[in-house]
Image (cartoon, rainbow, N blue to C red):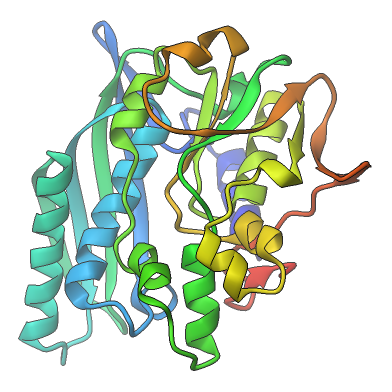
Length: 306
């Protein structure tokens, strides 16, 4: 079974849950308590161009990004560590240093941890946050503009070059090795946007998540997608790479047009939300249904439709 099928199956079996967004949420006094978990598996998530310290920091970033996508303030980080018996101290100490570095960067406290034996290194991280107004995938409204922070394509380009044994330019490698969560942007968006999601599996998949959850149609413009310039120079189909590139940790959000002037950070408007269903992309004068591109676990360890 694919990752998405397993998730749907488990949710079907749960009677009382708050799943289906980047983080779960429970009402706590006059705010929302946000809880998320995101696992890093060495074989699939840590190419050998990453150091153990960078891997440790990445697992903090992954979880903080989920809190950011909900419009929450990250407060704490926790983790469980699975390690083979023969794991050397240098690797473990590097992971610990990376977790500490990530916690300091995002201002979160490390509150819990557990260790067990495993066949490969697994860091199962989690984060706790607090929000006053949640950004739900299910709250996109017809008339909203679809926007994205940053630029796209570098992590997937780095991975593809690595898989082919080719040299990775430093600026391409930078984001793959040291991604950043958009926690400040998420907090600001909680005041003005209607919905949001972070790009962990690819822009295409995230747009489909919003469209399905909100029962709306999303239309994006190919020419508006913010593709990294070096990616444009390296790959044959930069738009496809930008749509499929995972672990970007940029935020995709939908926002009423009248609220755009309140946003203080840089972003790109790539499309709009309409009544209907599905996700479509405008290419010159043609409108095409956007295929679902991006990473999916348990799909042969490969990118879907790439």
